[in-house]
Image 1 (spheres, rainbow, N blue to C red):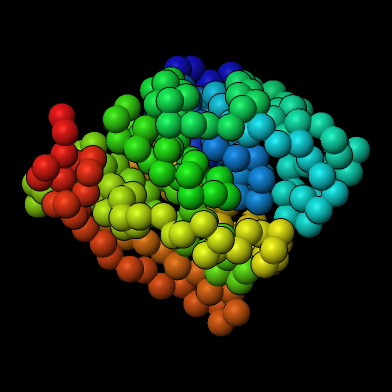
Image 2: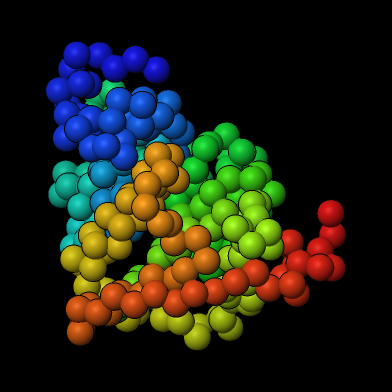
Length: 260
């Protein structure tokens, strides 16, 4: 996919990178990425994907912008309060990079809708704030054979991993699923919501930017991805740690007793 003269100048710092260059930038332009959630994680993620030149960005979110969002959801502005987040985010993308197409999905994903939607995109990035959506999206990506970048935020901590559960690893064993890492969601009320517990706004920016890097890596391979590794960020001590995890033969999606 050819780049225009404007795009060549816009992406000049990518084009001189040996691991991206012209072919990699063309792959970014041709890519379709679905972002689930236009909130704390989705806001910086969408901005950096748009700046990087991802050709089509789908945004799935059924929420409207509120004043309390603006402490961390930097893609939205004060005049956007009351607007659907998909509308506000789409407008911000158009101002940042007119070469990027935004497809709005102003609805909450369910097990049924996630499966169909994931199949329409090359990569899915989940920045949702609830376990029901995370499990629905991760299961859908496995069935649609799509890579998934998923992250979560706490008060002063965050986590991030990449899933390619439809593929095998270098050892020939299946790559792990989200359910290999988290077999079951916590009981209702066990994990306080952002509104209840609070969250450091700048941490959302850090984690959303790291998500963008993993999405770009999924489109234009470079370095080592977070497949089979959970990155944990502690903002209190400014510590980054990585936990390795593997395929669980008992997982219900690709385990030994999984239904075909």
